[in-house]
Length: 247
Ligand SMILES: Nc1ncnc2c1ncn2[C@@H]1O[C@H](COP(=O)(O)OP(=O)(O)O)[C@@H](O)[C@H]1O
Ligand SMILES: [Mg+2]
Image (cartoon, rainbow, N blue to C red):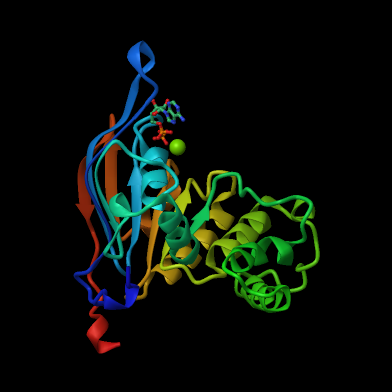
Protein backbone atom coordinates (compact mmCIF):
# COMPACT_ATOMS: atom_id res chain seq x y z
CA UNK A 1 0.00 0.00 0.00
CA UNK A 2 2.09 2.88 -1.25
CA UNK A 3 0.39 6.22 -1.87
CA UNK A 4 3.46 7.60 -3.57
CA UNK A 5 3.14 5.16 -6.44
CA UNK A 6 -0.16 6.71 -7.39
CA UNK A 7 0.52 9.07 -10.30
CA UNK A 8 -0.99 12.52 -10.00
CA UNK A 9 -2.85 14.06 -12.92
CA UNK A 10 -6.15 15.64 -13.86
CA UNK A 11 -7.61 12.33 -15.03
CA UNK A 12 -6.76 10.44 -11.88
CA UNK A 13 -9.52 9.39 -9.53
CA UNK A 14 -9.58 10.11 -5.83
CA UNK A 15 -12.41 7.62 -5.26
CA UNK A 16 -13.74 4.81 -7.45
CA UNK A 17 -16.72 2.74 -6.31
CA UNK A 18 -17.92 -0.21 -8.40
CA UNK A 19 -21.05 -2.28 -7.82
CA UNK A 20 -21.25 -1.68 -4.09
CA UNK A 21 -24.09 -3.42 -2.28
CA UNK A 22 -24.82 -2.83 1.39
CA UNK A 23 -27.77 -4.11 3.38
CA UNK A 24 -28.75 -3.69 7.01
CA UNK A 25 -30.62 -6.30 9.05
CA UNK A 26 -32.04 -9.57 7.75
CA UNK A 27 -35.31 -11.32 6.90
CA UNK A 28 -38.36 -9.05 6.95
CA UNK A 29 -36.31 -6.28 8.55
CA UNK A 30 -33.71 -6.26 5.77
CA UNK A 31 -33.01 -2.90 4.12
CA UNK A 32 -30.81 -2.76 1.05
CA UNK A 33 -29.32 0.73 1.41
CA UNK A 34 -26.89 0.51 -1.55
CA UNK A 35 -28.10 -1.50 -4.54
CA UNK A 36 -25.02 -1.66 -6.76
CA UNK A 37 -23.52 1.81 -6.60
CA UNK A 38 -21.04 3.01 -9.24
CA UNK A 39 -19.46 6.30 -8.31
CA UNK A 40 -16.29 8.28 -8.80
CA UNK A 41 -14.69 11.44 -7.49
CA UNK A 42 -11.69 13.04 -9.16
CA UNK A 43 -8.60 14.59 -7.71
CA UNK A 44 -8.89 18.34 -7.40
CA UNK A 45 -12.67 18.53 -7.35
CA UNK A 46 -15.46 19.31 -4.94
CA UNK A 47 -18.05 16.69 -5.70
CA UNK A 48 -21.55 16.97 -4.31
CA UNK A 49 -23.92 14.06 -3.66
CA UNK A 50 -27.62 14.93 -3.57
CA UNK A 51 -30.78 12.90 -3.23
CA UNK A 52 -33.86 12.36 -1.07
CA UNK A 53 -33.64 11.34 2.58
CA UNK A 54 -33.02 7.62 2.95
CA UNK A 55 -31.55 7.10 -0.54
CA UNK A 56 -28.21 5.91 0.85
CA UNK A 57 -25.99 9.03 0.92
CA UNK A 58 -24.64 8.61 4.45
CA UNK A 59 -24.21 4.87 3.90
CA UNK A 60 -22.13 5.56 0.78
CA UNK A 61 -19.97 8.10 2.64
CA UNK A 62 -19.38 5.58 5.44
CA UNK A 63 -18.34 2.94 2.90
CA UNK A 64 -15.90 5.34 1.22
CA UNK A 65 -14.52 6.36 4.61
CA UNK A 66 -13.95 2.73 5.51
CA UNK A 67 -16.09 2.94 8.64
CA UNK A 68 -18.77 0.57 7.30
CA UNK A 69 -18.16 -2.90 5.86
CA UNK A 70 -20.10 -3.64 2.66
CA UNK A 71 -21.53 -6.85 1.19
CA UNK A 72 -20.13 -6.72 -2.35
CA UNK A 73 -18.28 -4.46 -4.76
CA UNK A 74 -15.03 -2.52 -4.89
CA UNK A 75 -13.91 0.76 -3.35
CA UNK A 76 -10.60 2.38 -4.26
CA UNK A 77 -9.43 5.53 -2.50
CA UNK A 78 -6.42 7.11 -4.21
CA UNK A 79 -5.79 3.73 -5.78
CA UNK A 80 -5.89 1.87 -2.46
CA UNK A 81 -8.40 -1.00 -2.46
CA UNK A 82 -10.46 -0.74 0.74
CA UNK A 83 -12.25 -3.99 -0.20
CA UNK A 84 -8.93 -5.85 0.05
CA UNK A 85 -7.67 -4.28 3.29
CA UNK A 86 -7.96 -5.69 6.79
CA UNK A 87 -9.85 -3.71 9.41
CA UNK A 88 -6.63 -2.45 10.99
CA UNK A 89 -5.16 -1.45 7.62
CA UNK A 90 -8.36 0.44 6.85
CA UNK A 91 -8.25 2.23 10.21
CA UNK A 92 -4.63 3.26 9.65
CA UNK A 93 -5.37 4.39 6.09
CA UNK A 94 -8.39 6.40 7.24
CA UNK A 95 -6.42 8.10 10.03
CA UNK A 96 -3.79 9.32 7.58
CA UNK A 97 -5.82 10.07 4.47
CA UNK A 98 -9.42 10.94 5.32
CA UNK A 99 -10.99 13.85 7.22
CA UNK A 100 -14.68 14.10 8.20
CA UNK A 101 -17.08 16.94 8.74
CA UNK A 102 -20.47 16.07 10.17
CA UNK A 103 -23.80 17.90 10.25
CA UNK A 104 -23.73 18.28 14.02
CA UNK A 105 -20.01 19.10 14.27
CA UNK A 106 -19.29 16.20 16.70
CA UNK A 107 -16.87 18.30 18.75
CA UNK A 108 -15.87 17.12 22.21
CA UNK A 109 -17.51 19.62 24.62
CA UNK A 110 -15.06 19.10 27.48
CA UNK A 111 -12.05 19.97 25.31
CA UNK A 112 -10.97 23.43 24.17
CA UNK A 113 -10.95 24.29 20.45
CA UNK A 114 -7.22 23.68 20.13
CA UNK A 115 -7.54 20.35 21.95
CA UNK A 116 -10.41 19.27 19.67
CA UNK A 117 -8.40 20.13 16.57
CA UNK A 118 -5.32 18.31 17.91
CA UNK A 119 -7.10 14.95 18.12
CA UNK A 120 -6.31 13.64 14.57
CA UNK A 121 -2.62 14.51 15.05
CA UNK A 122 -2.46 12.76 18.41
CA UNK A 123 -4.08 9.69 16.83
CA UNK A 124 -1.31 9.75 14.21
CA UNK A 125 1.36 9.82 16.90
CA UNK A 126 2.26 13.52 17.22
CA UNK A 127 3.40 14.92 20.57
CA UNK A 128 0.91 17.15 22.38
CA UNK A 129 3.13 20.23 21.90
CA UNK A 130 3.54 19.63 18.16
CA UNK A 131 -0.17 18.84 17.74
CA UNK A 132 -1.28 22.01 19.54
CA UNK A 133 1.15 24.18 17.55
CA UNK A 134 -0.23 22.86 14.27
CA UNK A 135 -3.84 23.02 15.53
CA UNK A 136 -3.33 26.69 16.46
CA UNK A 137 -2.09 27.45 12.94
CA UNK A 138 -5.07 25.74 11.32
CA UNK A 139 -7.54 27.51 13.63
CA UNK A 140 -6.06 30.76 12.33
CA UNK A 141 -6.58 29.60 8.73
CA UNK A 142 -10.30 29.06 9.41
CA UNK A 143 -10.61 32.49 11.03
CA UNK A 144 -10.59 31.51 14.71
CA UNK A 145 -7.38 33.12 15.92
CA UNK A 146 -7.75 34.08 19.58
CA UNK A 147 -10.48 31.49 20.30
CA UNK A 148 -8.08 28.55 20.74
CA UNK A 149 -8.65 28.03 24.44
CA UNK A 150 -12.42 28.40 24.48
CA UNK A 151 -14.80 25.50 24.74
CA UNK A 152 -16.77 24.92 21.52
CA UNK A 153 -20.05 25.47 23.40
CA UNK A 154 -19.08 29.14 23.85
CA UNK A 155 -18.96 29.63 20.08
CA UNK A 156 -21.67 30.24 17.48
CA UNK A 157 -22.82 27.45 15.13
CA UNK A 158 -20.73 28.85 12.28
CA UNK A 159 -17.66 29.06 14.49
CA UNK A 160 -18.18 25.51 15.80
CA UNK A 161 -18.39 24.23 12.24
CA UNK A 162 -15.10 26.05 11.54
CA UNK A 163 -13.52 24.19 14.46
CA UNK A 164 -14.85 20.94 12.98
CA UNK A 165 -13.37 21.89 9.61
CA UNK A 166 -10.02 22.72 11.23
CA UNK A 167 -10.11 19.29 12.88
CA UNK A 168 -10.83 17.60 9.54
CA UNK A 169 -7.92 19.44 7.85
CA UNK A 170 -5.24 19.46 10.49
CA UNK A 171 -3.54 16.20 9.47
CA UNK A 172 -3.71 17.26 5.80
CA UNK A 173 -5.90 14.39 4.60
CA UNK A 174 -6.15 13.93 0.84
CA UNK A 175 -9.88 13.23 1.01
CA UNK A 176 -12.39 15.22 3.04
CA UNK A 177 -15.87 13.80 3.44
CA UNK A 178 -18.69 16.06 4.60
CA UNK A 179 -22.19 14.91 5.55
CA UNK A 180 -24.55 17.91 5.35
CA UNK A 181 -21.89 20.35 6.59
CA UNK A 182 -23.99 23.51 6.24
CA UNK A 183 -27.41 22.38 7.38
CA UNK A 184 -26.97 23.90 10.85
CA UNK A 185 -25.67 27.19 9.44
CA UNK A 186 -27.20 30.37 8.04
CA UNK A 187 -26.65 31.29 4.38
CA UNK A 188 -23.55 33.46 4.87
CA UNK A 189 -21.76 31.03 7.17
CA UNK A 190 -22.70 28.12 4.88
CA UNK A 191 -21.22 29.97 1.89
CA UNK A 192 -18.01 30.75 3.78
CA UNK A 193 -17.59 27.09 4.73
CA UNK A 194 -18.17 26.01 1.12
CA UNK A 195 -15.65 28.53 -0.22
CA UNK A 196 -13.08 27.17 2.19
CA UNK A 197 -13.85 23.58 1.19
CA UNK A 198 -13.65 24.41 -2.51
CA UNK A 199 -10.26 26.03 -2.00
CA UNK A 200 -9.03 22.94 -0.19
CA UNK A 201 -10.28 20.65 -2.95
CA UNK A 202 -8.38 22.46 -5.69
CA UNK A 203 -5.12 20.54 -5.53
CA UNK A 204 -3.98 17.61 -7.64
CA UNK A 205 -3.85 15.20 -4.74
CA UNK A 206 -6.97 16.37 -2.88
CA UNK A 207 -10.70 15.82 -3.10
CA UNK A 208 -13.73 16.98 -1.14
CA UNK A 209 -17.03 15.08 -1.21
CA UNK A 210 -20.07 16.86 0.21
CA UNK A 211 -23.50 15.34 0.81
CA UNK A 212 -26.11 18.06 0.89
CA UNK A 213 -29.81 18.79 0.90
CA UNK A 214 -29.08 22.49 0.86
CA UNK A 215 -29.74 23.91 -2.60
CA UNK A 216 -28.21 27.25 -1.52
CA UNK A 217 -24.77 25.67 -1.83
CA UNK A 218 -25.17 23.57 -5.00
CA UNK A 219 -23.31 26.11 -7.13
CA UNK A 220 -20.11 25.39 -5.21
CA UNK A 221 -19.94 21.90 -6.73
CA UNK A 222 -17.61 21.03 -9.60
CA UNK A 223 -19.82 17.99 -10.29
CA UNK A 224 -23.08 16.72 -8.85
CA UNK A 225 -23.97 13.08 -8.34
CA UNK A 226 -27.66 12.34 -7.89
CA UNK A 227 -28.65 9.32 -5.83
CA UNK A 228 -32.07 7.73 -5.62
CA UNK A 229 -33.21 4.53 -3.97
CA UNK A 230 -29.75 3.11 -3.27
CA UNK A 231 -28.26 3.93 -6.66
CA UNK A 232 -26.50 6.70 -8.52
CA UNK A 233 -29.03 7.94 -11.08
CA UNK A 234 -27.03 10.57 -12.93
CA UNK A 235 -23.95 12.77 -12.79
CA UNK A 236 -23.97 16.40 -13.85
CA UNK A 237 -20.65 17.20 -15.48
CA UNK A 238 -20.02 20.84 -14.81
CA UNK A 239 -16.44 20.22 -13.85
CA UNK A 240 -13.67 21.92 -15.84
CA UNK A 241 -10.48 19.94 -15.37
CA UNK A 242 -7.52 21.88 -14.06
CA UNK A 243 -4.30 21.30 -15.96
CA UNK A 244 -2.07 20.38 -13.06
CA UNK A 245 0.98 20.05 -15.30
CA UNK A 246 1.07 23.84 -15.63
CA UNK A 247 1.12 24.43 -11.88
N1 LIG B 1 -27.47 1.35 10.83
C1 LIG B 1 -28.57 1.12 10.11
N2 LIG B 1 -29.40 0.10 10.40
C2 LIG B 1 -30.50 -0.16 9.66
N3 LIG B 1 -30.87 0.55 8.59
C3 LIG B 1 -30.07 1.60 8.24
C4 LIG B 1 -28.90 1.93 8.98
N4 LIG B 1 -28.31 3.01 8.39
C5 LIG B 1 -29.10 3.33 7.34
N5 LIG B 1 -30.15 2.49 7.25
C6 LIG B 1 -31.20 2.52 6.22
O1 LIG B 1 -30.56 2.57 4.95
C7 LIG B 1 -31.23 3.47 4.08
C8 LIG B 1 -30.26 4.57 3.66
O2 LIG B 1 -29.94 5.37 4.77
P1 LIG B 1 -28.92 6.59 4.71
O3 LIG B 1 -27.68 6.15 4.03
O4 LIG B 1 -28.79 7.13 6.08
O5 LIG B 1 -29.70 7.63 3.77
P2 LIG B 1 -29.50 9.21 3.56
O6 LIG B 1 -28.21 9.60 4.17
O7 LIG B 1 -29.53 9.38 2.06
O8 LIG B 1 -30.68 9.88 4.19
C9 LIG B 1 -32.44 3.98 4.84
O9 LIG B 1 -33.54 3.18 4.50
C10 LIG B 1 -32.05 3.78 6.29
O10 LIG B 1 -33.17 3.59 7.09
MG1 LIG C 1 -27.76 11.02 5.70
